[in-house]
Length: 353
Image (cartoon, rainbow, N blue to C red):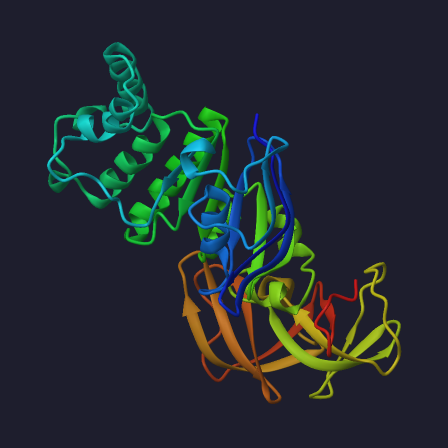
């Protein structure tokens, strides 16, 4: 039973602050995803939790025990990296068993665990092959199996799917989540991929420049972003963010002059005349004969089950999404109504909800 708690964790390299006083608590058996742009500190945070990097300040606790100064081997964690890091001269069976052999486990224990993990990951028919005879997805399963066979308390994944093609990435993503559910361990996963983050996570941690911007269930982070950064980062296509101002408690106005009603009961704390950033998700607009938004289509992306339509609204470019495989064409004039909007303070970027 491993609940992980971070207390004011900071990491510096010289004068450069990579992680800045991070406080967080991850429940036992949860699947935690650290997400953010490249260079935001997510991999460094993972490595600090694993013990591969020493924290500059703060503490890391596993089940109430301070592990901040412990070596990785004493934290009972296992890591799966972006590179498979398999031993090329060893068979799959030997790759899986090697860590247990180093620990001098009994042969019958090793054989039983290897067989169990190989069956779980559906690689039992590959045990006598060498890595060079495996596909990318099979190699990644072996890398995961090498971690699983140790039965650690915490699994760490550092962008493990980045080297796979899209079809394999989807398949192995499902394997990782299924494995987590079957084993019941705590998992921490690093990615910059929106789909991976939203589909895998029980707990989503959004980072920017070494600072945690928001922690919560994926759907809560998506529907109630804490600030402008989270709003623009989480979700695909990204939320439309347009400058404007508050007219009164029931109306906002875009800089283009378009006025939009503030939905009743939305819970925004706004002051008349205040400058705001107005956020509208592409899926929160629908086509009407006479609506407040009128845009000219400049690009249509057809994605099979739906289309993304890019258009000009005054000086701003916005994106909307429609179900189905047929949409408007370039040059068409669309009128749209807004189902839900988000308001952020123009200066500080925080949500006004």
